[in-house]
Image (cartoon, rainbow, N blue to C red; front, side, top):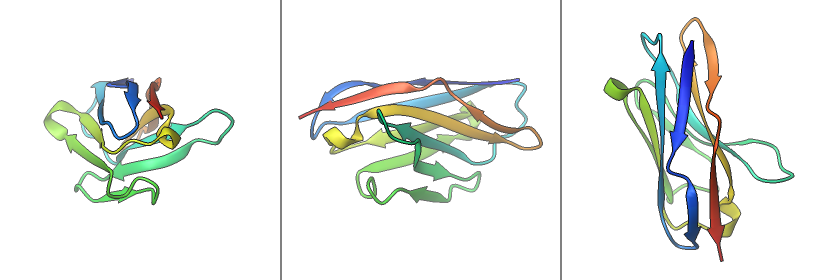
Length: 116
C-alpha cells in the first residue's frame, strides 16, 4: 500500500505564494511520474503540473511562469511552489503518484483559497 499526504494549503491574498508538499509512504521501491491536479467547485479535476522520474516537467498553460513543480526522490516527496496566486487558482489540490507495477495513487487533497 502507498499513502500520499498533502500539506501546505491555506488562505492567501491574491499575489501571494504558497508551497504545497506531498509525501508518499508505504512499500515504495520507486515512484514514476508525480503530479498535482486541482478541482474547483462545479468543475472537473484538471492537471496543474507533473514531473517525471527524470525531472521532466509539464504545466497547465494557466500556471506557466507562476508555479514550479519539483521532487525529492530521497524523501519520496513532490512540491508545488505557487507564486503570484490568483482567485481563479482557488481549488482543492490533489497529489498523484504513479508507482511502477502498482498504478496510480491519490492524496486526500488540500484546500487552496485565494482572496481578491
